[in-house]
Amino acid sequence: MALNAQQKSVIQKTLPSERVFFDFSDRSEYTKDATEMIFPPDALFMAETEEELVQAVRLCRQIELPLIIRGAGTGYSGGALAVQGGLLVSIENIDEIKIDTRTKTAVVGPGAITGDIMKAAEKENLFYPPDPASFKESCIGGNLAENAGGLRCKKYGVTKDYVLACRGIDAEGKIIEIDHSSPFGLLDLMIGSEGTLFVFSEITLRLLDLPRPGNTIQAVFDDTVDAASVVAEVTAAGIVPCIMEFMDGDAIACSNRYDPDHRIEEGAAMLLFETDGAAADNETAAIKAVCEKYAATALRLADDSETRENLWQTRRNLSKAVKSAYKSKISEDVCVPPSRLPQLVAYVSRLAKKLPIRVNCYGHAGDGNLHVNFLGQIGDKKENQAITEGVERLFDKTLALEGTLTGEHGIGITKKDYMGREFSPSTMRCMHRLKKCLDPENLVNPGKIFP
Ligand SMILES: Cc1cc2nc3c(=O)[nH]c(=O)nc-3n(C[C@H](O)[C@H](O)[C@H](O)COP(=O)(O)OP(=O)(O)OC[C@H]3O[C@@H](n4cnc5c(N)ncnc54)[C@H](O)[C@@H]3O)c2cc1C
Image 1 (cartoon, rainbow, N blue to C red):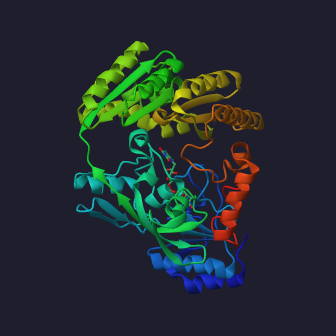
Image 2 (cartoon, rainbow, N blue to C red; image 1 turned 180 degrees about the vertical axis):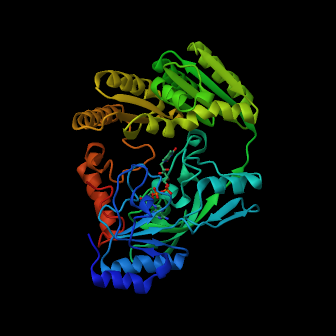
Image 3 (tube, rainbow, N blue to C red; image 1 turned 90 degrees about the vertical axis):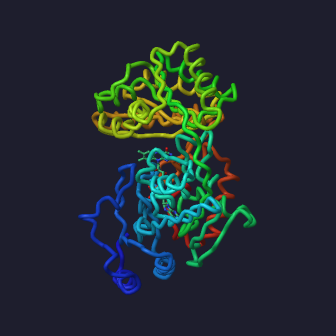
C-alpha cells in the first residue's frame, strides 16, 4: 500500500523529519527479519522516546496506517515485517538500562539488547537468566513480545517469569502501566502478544543472585534416540541442569564444516549440558552417569572458562553454519513434553530419510523444544513442495504427541495458517474478539497471528 500525499505530509509534519525515512535502498535491513522475507514498509521512524512512540501510534490512527514495532529484527516468524505496508517504528534507540541492586531489579528501555542487560546485571553480581540464542542482538521489547525462551529456560523459566511491570502504549495511543496485580492478568496478556496489542516502552525486570558456575558437559552419541533418551531420563530423575541442548548429526557436520578449528567427533547426535548453583557437582556426576549408560562415544567436561567456550562453539555456530550450508532454510520450532522427545527425534530422522531434501534439527532439549530445519540446495519448485510437505507432517506429528507448533518463535506470519490445527474454532474466535476489542481498527501489526 503506497502512502497518499496527505498521509506522507502528516508523517513529515508530526515526527522529527531527520529520523523518518521513505527510501529503503540503504536501509534494506528494515524490510526483513531473520525469516529473510522482504516487506518494505511505507515509512520508517527511529523513535527515541516514549513520547515519540505515543505520537507514532496516534498518527497511525489519524491517517489509518498500519503500525509495526521493530526491535532488532531477529524474529523467526515474521512478526516485525510490514506485510501490509505502514509505518515501521524502530525502538532500538530506546535502550537505557538501570540496575537497582537494592531491589534486585532492572528498569530498561524496550530497545535494550538482552545481552547488555545480562552484562550490566553481572557487574553487580546479579543474574538475568532468559537467554535466547540471539541474546547478543535481540532487544528486550522483542523478547517480551515473543515471550522468548532460551537455553536456560528449563531451569530458570522464560521472559515472562522475569517481568515485574511495564509501561506501554495501547492502540488508542494512551500510556498504560501494568504489573502483576493488574486484573485480567493484563501483564501476561501483553507478554507474547507479538506486537499486535500493545507497544512496550519501559520494562521492569526481576534479577536473581548470580549462581555459582558449575560444569559444561558435551556428549556425542551414535544414535539420536539414545541422546533423546538421555534427556528424558535426566528429566525423569529430577535433575535440572541449567542447560540441556540437543543437536543431530547433520547439524554437527554443518558446524564442523563451518568452523574446522572447533571440530568435534561426528556422530548421530550431541548433547550439551551446563550445571550451576549449589547442586552443580552432584548434577554433573549424575548426568555423566546417564550419558555413559547410553554409550556416549565422546564425553568431555569443562569447568574453566576457556575449555567451556570451546565446548560451546559447536552449538553457537549452528544458526550461521546451517544457513551457510544450504540455499533455502525453513526453520520450525516445535515443542513436545520432554518425555516424548525421543519419539519426535525418531520421527524427524525417519522424515529426513523419506524426503528428497535434507532435514536437520537441534534445540533446547530440556523443555522438549526442537528446531527442525528443512533445507534446500536448489530453491526450485519441487524442493519447495518437499519442504511444505515436510513441515505439514512435522506439525501433525507434534500435535499427535500433544506438543505445540511454536515453542518460542511465535506465530507471526509463518505459522498463522496452521493455527486452526492447534486451536479450536471457539478458541480462535475468543482470541479474535480480544484483538478486536483492544485494537478495533486493526492497525497494530495487522496480518499477524490470525489466518
Ligand atoms: C540466531 C537466532 C537464534 C534465536 N534463538 C532464539 C531462542 O533461543 N529463543 C527464542 O525465544 N527466540 C530465538 N530467536 C528468535 C528471536 O531472536 C526472538 O523472537 C527475539 O525475542 C526477537 O527479538 P527482536 O528484538 O529481534 O524482535 P523483532 O524481530 O524486531 O520483533 C519481533 C516481534 O516483537 C514485536 N516487538 C518488538 N519490540 C516491541 C515492543 N517494544 N513492543 C511491542 N512489540 C514489539 C514486533 O512487532 C514483532 O512482532 C532466535 C533468532 C535468531 C536469528
